[in-house]
Image 1 (tube, rainbow, N blue to C red):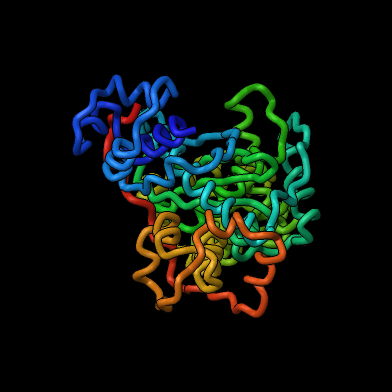
Image 2: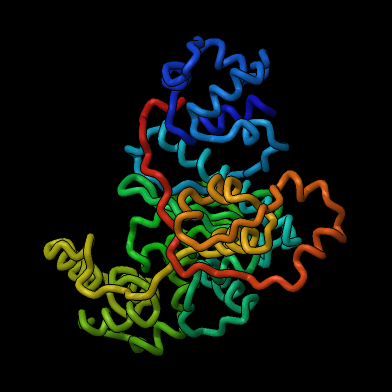
Length: 384
């Protein structure tokens, strides 16, 4: 178990074995570190402390219980995103998810989800059906969806934000029965919404066995989930010879779907023809609007569950400030905390179920409105 934790922490720090060896206060070879990670050798307590300090984690975090098992299903990235950065991203995502799952267990939120499926899809019409099935399952009707990321969390999903200026869109998978999404928060909120809906498509639709087809189907699902076909026809009409840019901007603000996605949605539903579709795309590229559209979607889309759980656990004296800092660095400086001692997660785990319930009774949940801080920037391409 120590080896798994050690490798995870090293990858999350963006370090190669050689890079970690160079940071240690007491020199050690990368071969020796490799043996630790593979479970072929066991470091003594002094060495564990030295390694933890170099990785900016606590020694106890390297000795904690079994890590959660994650099955990554889809990884939307650019071709130039290095393998090292991919490894670092998944390692940090796993760390964040383990923290959230530990807090979920403390509050008896359980391991569950409210997603239908898996739904078999063979064509784009099946994707439209799958999107409609999810809307029906969540009782959304055919109206715009406000706060999509929080809705996903409310339905049992875990959403992790990752700030990456280039090379990455989204990542999704399963932790046991819980759906998980990792989203790039560096993109505009309408793009985040589309990415989240896209990953939902991957999670509830069966794979076809062809990754390119799966991506096309997930795109169609995302557009249909955010704007159902009947709603699109209600907004645009059944046939158009032209689309006004200001009209598209208003629709973007109402539905949280980008102007370019609206143009594609109109073409997919045969509201506009291929010639108009191509003409509009050429105009967007000529004006540079394919990168920054002339109308913005103002609403904020950010996951909130993890931060609320950390703040709740602090308010209820269930974790220490050190615990909270390990979950969300800097959180203790962003709130007013009392001086009373808080039970650590390890201490609380030793309490009986009745004692845990007693700790929860009569305590007010504290919610900090400050937005969740972005993750630390990636620091190295040397990760192995």
